Image (cartoon, rainbow, N blue to C red; front, side):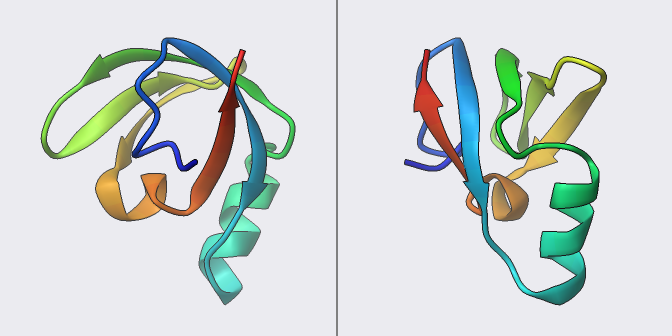
Length: 70
């Protein structure tokens, strides 16, 4: 499932999609195998605590981040 579809509070990133620069940016941010916590959801994005940093992750990007609960 993607981060956009995730309805839990805590999980782990398993993979990132996207092409070229987007994929590289997500990998460079250290998201692969990162544990995360969802702080808040709004229509335009999700406030996510990725451990070392928090970020508002927009719908387009959240659909590229594959996660599992736990």
